[in-house]
Amino acid sequence: MKEKVIVSWSGGKDSALALYELRKNKNYEIVALLTTITQDYDRISMHGVRTILLEMQAQSLGIPLEKVFITKDATNEQYERKMSEVMTKYPAVGVSSVVFGDIFLEDLRKYRENNLSKIGMKGIFPIWKRNTAELAHAFIDSRFKAVITCIDSNHLDKTFIGSAFDEQFLSRLPSTIDPCGENGEFHSFVYDGPIFQQRISHTTGKVVLRENRFYYCDLLPHQNSKSALCTFPTSKAS
Image 1 (cartoon, one colour):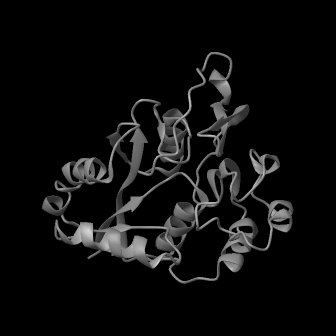
Image 2 (cartoon, rainbow, N blue to C red; image 1 turned 30 degrees about the vertical axis):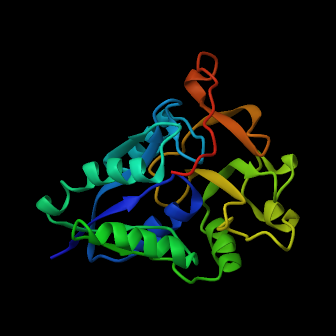
C-alpha cells in the first residue's frame, strides 16, 4: 500500500527536484501540493510569483493544490497557526508525511519536523544532503526550465534577476553563492520539465526593488499579460 504524502511546493526548482525524485519511488501517493500564498498580493510567499501561474503549474502536474493564506505582515506564530489549521485535516484521510525540497539547513529541517510532530506527521526530504552544485547541474540536465524571480541584493546584483536558471547563470555566480540558492540568495519559478504535462507559458514583466534589498521580476501568464496587474510581495518570511 502506498504512503500518502503532501508536497511542500514553492513553485521553484528545489521543490520540483524533490517531486521529481519522489515520483521515481512507486511507494508514495501524492495527494496535494501545499503552497503558502501572501493574500494581500495574491502571490507565492517569498518567490513573488502570481497565484494564477502556481495554479497553472498544479494543473500541468496533475496534482490538487492546497493553498495556505497568510497576510503580508504575518508573524511566525500566525504562519504556524494558519498552517496547522490547513494541515490537521490530512492525517484523518491517511496522509502521514509532507515532502520538502530542503537540502542542508539543519535548523529549518528541525523546525519543520517539530511542527509536523505536533499533528502526528513527519517530513520526507528527497534531496537532503545532496551536493548543491551537482543538484543544480542535474536540474538543467534533466531538461527542467526555470527563471529567477527574486534575488537578495546583499548577495547578488540586479543583473541576475529574470535570468534563466541555466549553465550560463551558474557560471556567473560568485563562488560565495550556493548554486541552488539554499541560503536565500535567489528564488525561482519552474515552467517546464519532465514532471510537467505542458509548459507554463509566460512573459516577463517589471522588475522592482522592495525594502531596498530584494529584487522581484514579475511573470505574467502569456494569455493575460496585457491585463494583469503588477503588485509585489514583501520579503517577509513565510
